[in-house]
Every structure is written in structure tokens, then in C-alpha cells.
Image (cartoon, rainbow, N blue to C red; front, top):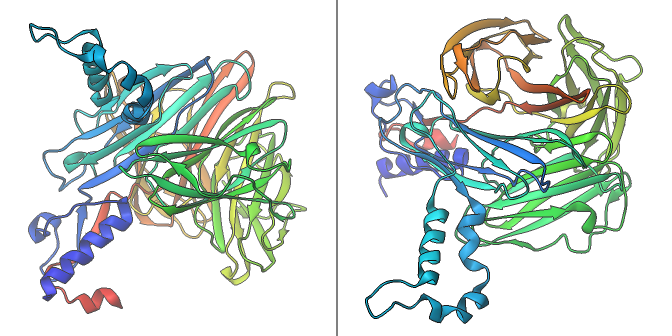
Length: 524
């Protein structure tokens, strides 16, 4: 095999690692702004996203949103489509019933389809119909669904829509377990996930939602870790997720042990899935718990609301070694050490929880956790409460990945949106762009300087003449690393509804080596 072929394979491999699946053509040095013989930074050409089933409540009102920022150098053609996973898997269901009624689908002597045939055709047409399809980069589109029938979504984007494609679902539940505002960014499929902060307690109803985008079944193991180590599970191994379908698994059905704080580890034996935990509480509402960043000796949990009444940190180290975590709060004035919580002790393989009280004390803040020498990997998340006793609402913030180049948050409104940005290790300059609105408005852009070791709730731009919701895209210009989260708030019946989403890098750009580059350079 010659060097050119090997270099192109390396480029495709890099894209596949970024998006789960990818397509790439030979880089054009002029279009990429790179000289021949050097790695070219090009827009990703194909990517996929998965959105879990929003709710089991008949009172739920869900908004799905899809968006791709304008990307220089992207293809001038392409599509971005989200379809219902449930609709796509529907033909596999009720197989026996369809067989019994097969005669009803025959044609008449005139060659006309019977009623059964018409229904089948309508069903197929519905299954192929997109729930959301983008028309142009830079303008978000939305769709709405009510009740417990709102589906999980499976989608792909290619061409001009692939680079930076983002989707979000936001659900409001008026009453019952989990009432409040629940939001989650749709994610790419993967093979391993960590969720510290889940629960099997009687007051909680926690589901792990597994979504399979592929044409073959995925096999998944779910491991649970409590305060004394791994919990004995009865049916947590070898869970089959059917092709192109979604499977919610109630965590309390996996074990007889009732524990307030549990770490969930999802391991995919074959195939790949999207995964997210929906944590619902009888008294304090609920929200989605996204996966924590990969186990690391240094973690950042960005954007704890400044009016948080209580902050509970849940952390877990997968190995056998114990660790004393150094805890600092990145506040608007810089890094500070919370009194009484300077270090937190974690035992290897055991979930630990720590009540940090009203940690932020009326100011924006982000937690920075550090293991000595970064030698012991840890995963972590915080549960945040807002509101007064009896009218409180909860949300979760996991350890986040930094924004290396660009990230986007959707479903923003002119009021009730807070963008929180932290640069714990060094100062940074960022650019924030407010997109056009879903129903009208002109994009606006501002730049901000984030001082080293601080967290800032910035006054994000709003589209001129805004109608509908809009997207906020954060780009790093210099310095860093930068971490960010977005909080949506509203008030219903005196209860402060809210939901927080960290902003991971959209992984919309990838370095592709020139065909003439020596493969040995990539191997070093």
C-alpha cells in the first residue's frame, strides 16, 4: 500500500473518531488555507445525533430544535434530518397481527388497494417523514410534541450542515414527578458513558435512556456503584437495544438496593448507543443528567447558578486507589477555596457525595476539582437546587469538556437565558454569536475577555428584531481552555423552573493530513 492511500485512511480514521462515522475527500490546500504538505483543518462532512425520548408524562410539552452555524469552507450542498426512532422501528412490532390481516391488504379486481393497504402506505410515509429538517445554516428550526408520545430522534447531517450541527430538546412538565423544565442536548453515539449523580432511592425515578442509531442491535451492560462499591444487579448485563430504536431502563429495576447517590457506568459490548439519565424527583422536580467528561485527574463543572440554594457534589473514581480531591470555586473575582471543603476524600470504586450548601453565595461560579498530580481519574456531577423550601426545582451539571474551537446552545429566549463561561487556567478571549431567530431576527456578535481563574455570567447578544428562539454559538479566539454552560429559567406557580446544559465542543472541524504527508509523522 502506498503512502498516499495510508494518509487518506488516517484522515478518515480521525474523522470517524470525532463523529462516530465520517466521510472525507482529499483536502484542497487552497480552500483549507493550508500549504501543501501540512495538515489541513477542514469541516466535518458527515455526523450523527441522537435525542432521547423526552418524557413519560401526559402533561409534557416538548420543543425540538436543530441548528448548524455558518462554517467557512463547508460544502454548498447537504442535509440535516432528525427522524423518530420509534417510527423507524415500528415495522418490527405487531408482526403476528399483521400476518393475520394479510388478506386485508390484497387488491381488488380493478387493481385498487384495500383499506389495509392504504393504511400501510400511510404508515410508511409517516415513518420516512422528518421531524426536523434544516433549510439553511445559521437559522434554527423547531418542532413541537405534546404528551408521553413525543419520540426519541435519530438523525444525520452531511455537507454544509455537518460542521457544528447541534440539536436540543426542552420539555416543560406542569405537574407530577419531575415537574419543571427539563433540557438535554442531543449527543453522538459512543461505547462508554459515566453518570455520577443518579439514584435508586424511593423518592427518585431515574431512567437511563439508550438510543441505537444503527441497523443492527446493540448489546449494553449497565453497572451501578453506590457508597460501598458496586451494587448487585439482576438484569443489568446484556441488555439488547433493537436496531434504530430507543430503550428507557428504570434504574431501580436493576437492583434491590436503595441508595441516594449512585454512579452509572454504561458499557457497550457490541454496536454503539446514545445515553442520558433522566432524573425525576417527587418533591424537587427533575432534569436530564448528561454524561460526565471522561475520567480525569482534573475536572471542571461550569456554570452553577448564582442563586443556587444547595449544591450536592457526587464523585467517583473507577480504580482501586483512594484520592483526596482539591476543591476550588472559580468565582468572578478568581479561584477560591470553599471553607470546610478544601479537600474531599474518595475511596476507590465507591460513590461519594458532599453537600456544599449555597456554594456560590449570589455570584456566578464553577467547580474545579483536582487530584494530586492528576494521577487518579475521577468523574463527577453536581445536583443544584433553586427556590425556597416546598417550591424548589433541581438540575444537574456534570464535569464538562472544554470548548476547543466552537460550541452552541439552543432554545434561547430574550429573557431567561444565562450564558456562563469560565477559564480556570488562563485568560481567554471568546466570540459569541446570536443566530437569527426561528421566526425572524438578525444575527448579532460580541467578543468578551474572560480573566484567568474566573467565571462570568456574560450578557450574551440577542438577535435584532428577534422572533422565536435562537442559538448562541461560542468560539474561542485565544487563551483558554474555556468551559461554558447555558441556563434556561422560567417561573410557574412560584416555582423557579430551570435547566442547565454544559457546552461541549461541537467537533465540527478536523485536521486531515495532506496526501503527501508521511504516515510516520502521524504515528509519533
